[in-house]
Length: 171
Image 1 (cartoon, one colour):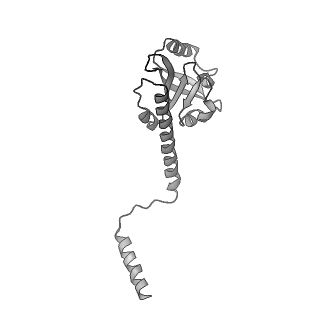
Image 2 (tube, helix red, strand yellow):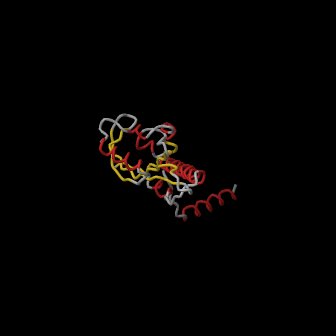
Image 3 (cartoon, rainbow, N blue to C red):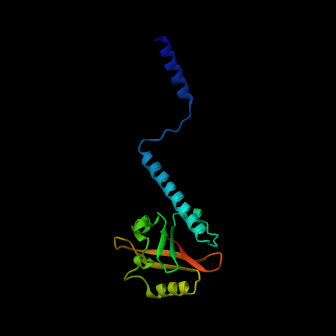
């Protein structure tokens, strides 16, 4: 038993000389959410890279930075059906990314959405030109929000229109 007391004293002396930053138990929720978000960003990045490779895109988009900045990334095919939405769409719209796959971006429009702005976006899409606009969109709950959109046509290595991509954030 004497050896055990000496061990405990040595352990106590050692521990008291350490400069450890102890985290309160309540902080684990914060770190857990951060790690989950980091993992979701990684999965989104992996899917975007697969889309780039599988469709032979000519692209120099910095997907990683866009995701780290918590922007929403939406990719549609050439017929404007959503084929990818980043996990950050949930926070902005209330929709899970799986819920919007196969839908049109018109899903987010409603009564307060400017017809003039929608027509300008439609014209840019028809002309296969980039655009940057702020529109009134609707969340799943029906609440409106201002959405700043930077949209780009994406061409494959043969120069043919492949997809459209939009980087979106609440304005």
